[in-house]
Image (cartoon, rainbow, N blue to C red; front, side, top):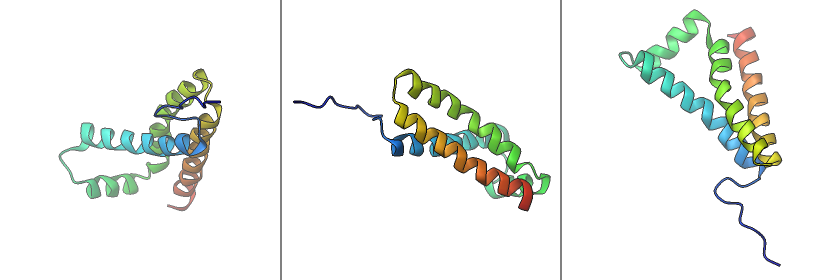
Length: 102
């Protein structure tokens, strides 16, 4: 019996987790390049820390994960969707840390 190929995005939890972690980072880079390309990334980070908006930006950068989550749900790749959800929970813990301790 031959097992069908899963393709590039298989139905594995680590696939969803990896994509769920990378998408917000790509969103951050796009936001930085589009809005703050005249300052260094470290100056950008210092400005975020000074204004105390890190938790708000993390929430904003997690929005594209919704698209990936629903993509996996529509393709019936439920295990990969769980990985994206796990990445959102990890980012949520980081967001709480930034909100209350930094």
